[in-house]
Length: 271
Image (cartoon, rainbow, N blue to C red; front, side):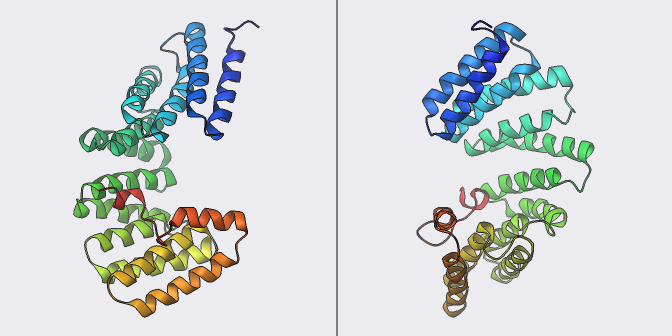
Protein backbone atom coordinates (compact mmCIF):
# COMPACT_ATOMS: atom_id res chain seq x y z
CA UNK A 1 0.00 0.00 0.00
CA UNK A 2 2.89 2.33 0.63
CA UNK A 3 3.66 4.35 3.79
CA UNK A 4 1.07 7.07 3.10
CA UNK A 5 -2.02 4.88 2.70
CA UNK A 6 -4.95 5.47 5.06
CA UNK A 7 -4.90 1.81 6.10
CA UNK A 8 -1.35 2.39 7.30
CA UNK A 9 -2.55 5.41 9.29
CA UNK A 10 -5.17 3.20 10.92
CA UNK A 11 -2.47 0.75 11.93
CA UNK A 12 -0.46 3.58 13.49
CA UNK A 13 -3.55 4.58 15.49
CA UNK A 14 -4.05 1.00 16.67
CA UNK A 15 -0.42 0.82 17.73
CA UNK A 16 -0.77 4.15 19.54
CA UNK A 17 -3.78 2.87 21.46
CA UNK A 18 -1.79 -0.19 22.51
CA UNK A 19 1.17 1.98 23.60
CA UNK A 20 -1.19 4.22 25.55
CA UNK A 21 -2.74 1.27 27.36
CA UNK A 22 0.75 -0.03 28.08
CA UNK A 23 1.56 3.32 29.71
CA UNK A 24 4.05 4.40 27.06
CA UNK A 25 2.72 7.90 26.35
CA UNK A 26 5.79 9.09 24.42
CA UNK A 27 5.54 6.21 21.97
CA UNK A 28 1.78 6.62 21.74
CA UNK A 29 2.23 10.30 20.89
CA UNK A 30 4.66 9.45 18.08
CA UNK A 31 2.24 6.87 16.70
CA UNK A 32 -0.75 9.24 16.75
CA UNK A 33 1.29 12.05 15.22
CA UNK A 34 2.48 9.72 12.44
CA UNK A 35 -1.11 8.68 11.74
CA UNK A 36 -2.16 12.33 11.75
CA UNK A 37 0.56 13.33 9.27
CA UNK A 38 -0.47 10.55 6.86
CA UNK A 39 -4.15 11.44 7.15
CA UNK A 40 -3.50 15.15 6.65
CA UNK A 41 -1.46 14.42 3.53
CA UNK A 42 -4.09 12.09 2.12
CA UNK A 43 -7.34 13.76 3.21
CA UNK A 44 -6.31 17.35 3.80
CA UNK A 45 -5.67 19.36 6.98
CA UNK A 46 -9.33 20.33 7.39
CA UNK A 47 -10.92 16.96 6.73
CA UNK A 48 -13.44 15.56 9.17
CA UNK A 49 -11.56 12.28 8.90
CA UNK A 50 -8.67 13.54 11.02
CA UNK A 51 -10.77 14.63 14.00
CA UNK A 52 -10.70 11.20 15.62
CA UNK A 53 -6.90 11.21 15.66
CA UNK A 54 -6.84 14.75 17.01
CA UNK A 55 -9.20 13.72 19.80
CA UNK A 56 -6.99 10.77 20.75
CA UNK A 57 -3.91 12.97 20.76
CA UNK A 58 -5.64 15.63 22.86
CA UNK A 59 -6.83 13.04 25.36
CA UNK A 60 -3.31 11.64 25.60
CA UNK A 61 -2.01 15.08 26.54
CA UNK A 62 -4.86 15.64 28.99
CA UNK A 63 -4.23 12.33 30.73
CA UNK A 64 -0.66 13.50 31.31
CA UNK A 65 -1.97 16.85 32.59
CA UNK A 66 -0.36 18.61 29.63
CA UNK A 67 -3.38 20.82 29.19
CA UNK A 68 -1.56 23.59 27.32
CA UNK A 69 -0.70 21.00 24.65
CA UNK A 70 -4.13 19.39 24.66
CA UNK A 71 -6.05 22.65 24.21
CA UNK A 72 -4.88 23.58 20.67
CA UNK A 73 -5.43 19.99 19.51
CA UNK A 74 -9.00 19.98 20.84
CA UNK A 75 -9.54 23.48 19.41
CA UNK A 76 -8.55 22.24 15.97
CA UNK A 77 -10.85 19.23 16.18
CA UNK A 78 -13.73 21.46 17.25
CA UNK A 79 -13.10 23.96 14.46
CA UNK A 80 -13.12 21.22 11.80
CA UNK A 81 -16.35 19.70 13.13
CA UNK A 82 -18.09 23.08 13.22
CA UNK A 83 -16.97 23.90 9.68
CA UNK A 84 -17.96 20.53 8.20
CA UNK A 85 -21.06 19.69 10.25
CA UNK A 86 -22.35 23.03 11.48
CA UNK A 87 -22.24 24.50 14.97
CA UNK A 88 -25.34 22.65 16.24
CA UNK A 89 -24.59 19.11 15.08
CA UNK A 90 -24.59 16.38 17.74
CA UNK A 91 -21.01 15.40 16.82
CA UNK A 92 -19.87 18.89 17.78
CA UNK A 93 -20.94 18.43 21.40
CA UNK A 94 -18.23 15.88 22.33
CA UNK A 95 -15.57 18.19 20.88
CA UNK A 96 -16.94 21.07 22.95
CA UNK A 97 -16.78 18.91 26.07
CA UNK A 98 -13.24 17.71 25.32
CA UNK A 99 -11.98 21.27 25.06
CA UNK A 100 -14.04 22.45 28.03
CA UNK A 101 -12.63 19.66 30.20
CA UNK A 102 -9.08 20.62 29.26
CA UNK A 103 -9.84 24.21 30.26
CA UNK A 104 -11.55 23.04 33.45
CA UNK A 105 -8.57 21.02 34.67
CA UNK A 106 -6.28 23.87 33.61
CA UNK A 107 -8.28 26.19 35.93
CA UNK A 108 -9.54 28.21 32.95
CA UNK A 109 -13.12 28.35 34.15
CA UNK A 110 -14.15 31.40 32.13
CA UNK A 111 -13.15 29.66 28.91
CA UNK A 112 -14.76 26.36 29.91
CA UNK A 113 -18.21 27.65 30.88
CA UNK A 114 -19.56 28.71 27.46
CA UNK A 115 -18.34 25.46 25.91
CA UNK A 116 -20.10 23.36 28.54
CA UNK A 117 -23.24 25.42 28.02
CA UNK A 118 -23.13 24.98 24.25
CA UNK A 119 -22.70 21.22 24.67
CA UNK A 120 -25.70 21.12 27.01
CA UNK A 121 -27.81 23.00 24.49
CA UNK A 122 -26.82 20.69 21.64
CA UNK A 123 -27.46 17.52 23.65
CA UNK A 124 -30.84 18.83 24.77
CA UNK A 125 -31.88 19.71 21.23
CA UNK A 126 -30.61 16.52 19.60
CA UNK A 127 -31.12 13.88 22.30
CA UNK A 128 -34.03 15.17 24.34
CA UNK A 129 -34.19 16.54 27.87
CA UNK A 130 -34.21 13.11 29.53
CA UNK A 131 -31.04 11.85 27.86
CA UNK A 132 -28.12 10.62 30.00
CA UNK A 133 -25.93 12.84 27.82
CA UNK A 134 -27.92 15.84 29.03
CA UNK A 135 -27.50 14.67 32.63
CA UNK A 136 -23.73 14.44 32.15
CA UNK A 137 -23.64 17.91 30.60
CA UNK A 138 -25.57 19.27 33.59
CA UNK A 139 -23.14 17.55 35.96
CA UNK A 140 -20.24 19.12 34.06
CA UNK A 141 -21.62 22.59 34.67
CA UNK A 142 -22.36 21.80 38.29
CA UNK A 143 -18.79 20.56 38.69
CA UNK A 144 -17.46 23.74 37.10
CA UNK A 145 -19.33 25.94 39.56
CA UNK A 146 -18.44 23.72 42.51
CA UNK A 147 -14.75 24.01 41.64
CA UNK A 148 -15.18 27.79 41.96
CA UNK A 149 -17.08 27.36 45.25
CA UNK A 150 -20.20 28.77 43.54
CA UNK A 151 -22.37 26.22 45.28
CA UNK A 152 -25.64 28.10 44.82
CA UNK A 153 -25.04 28.12 41.08
CA UNK A 154 -24.03 24.46 41.05
CA UNK A 155 -27.04 23.15 42.96
CA UNK A 156 -29.77 23.55 40.27
CA UNK A 157 -27.61 21.79 37.68
CA UNK A 158 -26.93 18.85 39.99
CA UNK A 159 -30.62 18.71 40.93
CA UNK A 160 -31.74 18.64 37.31
CA UNK A 161 -29.17 15.96 36.50
CA UNK A 162 -30.40 14.05 39.52
CA UNK A 163 -33.98 14.05 38.24
CA UNK A 164 -32.75 12.43 35.02
CA UNK A 165 -30.29 9.95 36.47
CA UNK A 166 -31.57 9.04 39.93
CA UNK A 167 -33.14 5.76 38.90
CA UNK A 168 -30.13 4.72 36.80
CA UNK A 169 -27.01 5.55 38.79
CA UNK A 170 -25.79 7.30 41.92
CA UNK A 171 -23.36 9.86 40.51
CA UNK A 172 -25.77 12.78 40.77
CA UNK A 173 -26.84 11.78 44.28
CA UNK A 174 -23.19 11.61 45.35
CA UNK A 175 -22.56 15.01 43.78
CA UNK A 176 -25.43 16.49 45.77
CA UNK A 177 -24.15 14.90 48.99
CA UNK A 178 -20.65 16.27 48.46
CA UNK A 179 -22.05 19.68 47.56
CA UNK A 180 -24.02 19.93 50.81
CA UNK A 181 -21.06 18.60 52.77
CA UNK A 182 -18.91 21.37 51.27
CA UNK A 183 -21.31 24.04 52.54
CA UNK A 184 -21.63 22.34 55.96
CA UNK A 185 -25.27 21.36 55.44
CA UNK A 186 -24.77 18.00 57.14
CA UNK A 187 -28.47 17.15 57.33
CA UNK A 188 -28.98 17.32 53.57
CA UNK A 189 -25.62 15.71 52.86
CA UNK A 190 -26.58 12.83 55.15
CA UNK A 191 -29.87 12.38 53.29
CA UNK A 192 -28.25 12.30 49.86
CA UNK A 193 -25.46 9.95 50.97
CA UNK A 194 -28.05 7.51 52.28
CA UNK A 195 -30.15 7.78 49.12
CA UNK A 196 -27.07 7.24 46.96
CA UNK A 197 -26.08 4.13 48.87
CA UNK A 198 -29.62 2.73 48.90
CA UNK A 199 -30.22 3.27 45.20
CA UNK A 200 -26.71 2.11 44.35
CA UNK A 201 -27.15 -1.13 46.26
CA UNK A 202 -30.42 -1.83 44.47
CA UNK A 203 -29.36 -0.73 41.00
CA UNK A 204 -25.65 -1.53 40.87
CA UNK A 205 -25.16 -4.05 43.65
CA UNK A 206 -23.80 -3.51 47.15
CA UNK A 207 -20.30 -4.54 46.13
CA UNK A 208 -20.08 -2.13 43.18
CA UNK A 209 -17.00 0.12 43.41
CA UNK A 210 -19.06 3.30 43.05
CA UNK A 211 -21.26 2.24 45.98
CA UNK A 212 -18.21 1.38 48.10
CA UNK A 213 -16.63 4.76 47.32
CA UNK A 214 -19.85 6.50 48.37
CA UNK A 215 -19.88 4.53 51.63
CA UNK A 216 -16.30 5.63 52.30
CA UNK A 217 -17.20 9.27 51.67
CA UNK A 218 -20.25 8.99 53.92
CA UNK A 219 -18.18 7.50 56.75
CA UNK A 220 -15.60 10.24 56.29
CA UNK A 221 -18.28 12.91 56.66
CA UNK A 222 -19.78 11.23 59.72
CA UNK A 223 -16.38 11.21 61.41
CA UNK A 224 -15.81 14.86 60.55
CA UNK A 225 -18.97 15.84 62.48
CA UNK A 226 -18.27 13.60 65.47
CA UNK A 227 -20.72 10.81 64.63
CA UNK A 228 -18.04 8.18 65.15
CA UNK A 229 -20.31 5.27 66.07
CA UNK A 230 -22.33 5.69 62.88
CA UNK A 231 -19.14 6.07 60.87
CA UNK A 232 -17.80 2.80 62.24
CA UNK A 233 -20.97 0.96 61.23
CA UNK A 234 -20.70 2.26 57.66
CA UNK A 235 -16.98 1.44 57.54
CA UNK A 236 -17.58 -2.07 58.87
CA UNK A 237 -20.28 -2.67 56.27
CA UNK A 238 -18.02 -1.40 53.48
CA UNK A 239 -15.13 -3.56 54.71
CA UNK A 240 -17.36 -6.62 54.79
CA UNK A 241 -18.34 -6.02 51.18
CA UNK A 242 -14.75 -5.36 50.08
CA UNK A 243 -13.58 -8.58 51.71
CA UNK A 244 -15.95 -10.51 49.45
CA UNK A 245 -14.47 -9.06 46.28
CA UNK A 246 -11.90 -10.86 44.17
CA UNK A 247 -8.29 -9.71 44.74
CA UNK A 248 -8.25 -7.89 41.40
CA UNK A 249 -11.49 -6.00 42.00
CA UNK A 250 -10.58 -5.32 45.62
CA UNK A 251 -7.28 -3.78 44.48
CA UNK A 252 -9.29 -1.48 42.24
CA UNK A 253 -11.49 -0.52 45.17
CA UNK A 254 -8.46 0.33 47.30
CA UNK A 255 -6.90 2.33 44.50
CA UNK A 256 -10.14 4.21 43.95
CA UNK A 257 -10.79 5.05 47.57
CA UNK A 258 -7.20 5.66 48.59
CA UNK A 259 -5.31 4.85 51.74
CA UNK A 260 -7.37 7.26 53.82
CA UNK A 261 -10.52 5.28 53.02
CA UNK A 262 -12.25 7.85 50.86
CA UNK A 263 -12.13 9.76 47.64
CA UNK A 264 -13.81 12.95 46.61
CA UNK A 265 -14.68 13.30 42.91
CA UNK A 266 -12.76 16.10 41.13
CA UNK A 267 -15.75 18.50 40.95
CA UNK A 268 -15.81 19.03 44.74
CA UNK A 269 -12.22 18.30 45.65
CA UNK A 270 -10.51 20.20 42.86
CA UNK A 271 -10.26 23.56 44.64
